[in-house]
Length: 220
Length: 216
Image (cartoon, rainbow over all chains, first blue to last red; front, side, top):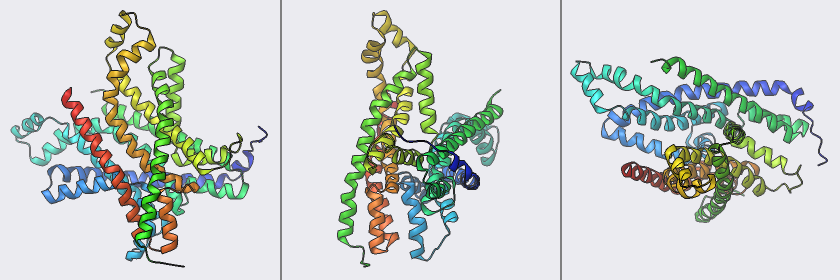
């Protein structure tokens, strides 16, 4: 092995890494918030909505979950302009990531809501709670505890998947790596460095979610 | 020269599916071997082996597949292998699959009650024999639905190989777009072809899961 590893050039371009990191975190956070919103609304529609809405949500979930994110991204960014909807790369990325996460979130939330036994809901009804109160206090809150671990892993997968948006030139962390690579030709080193950065973020997120879980559902 | 998206383009796209499936198969084969080892290490009696397996899974699951792919793409030349997209792709996808399969199969192995191990032990079976004759035959049944589910993830993720120039379905879509300049038609078609591969597997996984739950 005659290859000498040189990380110096990579770290010299740290501003790119920091900027990219910022974009990656921004994309992840926004997609998580809106994706989860779609997830809760979609799951409610899938379970309690009229027949049309139920089928619409089911089709949405199946179409998104059975096609690659990269292709979804290409459809939104390269395909929609031919239908007259031109989006900049960042918006296209946010829309694709949100729609993608939303589909997985619907399934997770739905499974959680469905796991609440019927008898609990009936108990709430018989106590004179309104439909909304039953949903909020008897169905949603207890099932949050069950959904949380799955949602947390899905969020981490999403954060890692934001790297795919570099393929439509969103200036995220992975894109920063390609810029540094083209300037320094230290390809192996730069991708190793961002690999470590992504891994640190994934581990940090995991620790954060574990802490939130402990605080929210720990001692009860 | 720009031409219309026609039947011939569709034929090319459909033909490119074989590379998507071949890459999936290679990754699944490689991932199964390593994944099984990782899963067994996770349930072994040696703390060090368990810790190594935990870290292996955490590191790979915590790194974007795209990064793994690029590290391999640029890294294979360092160890003297030729820089060919299919080598980098099949190696990195195998690695990726091994971590996820390892985790799925660990779950299946651990779902078997402790008493089954003890029963095997009291019959005089060693660790390997307990696994081989008592634990794995029961764990396989539990592991099939999530394994099929992971296969769907794997098929979809092979699309990332397009970024290093491996001509599978998505890359073929990019090439077709360059020739026809009809990105919407082409990528919707590509998405539809992925759907045709993945949806039956998703349904199958669901049916298996339901059957397993009913059976107990």
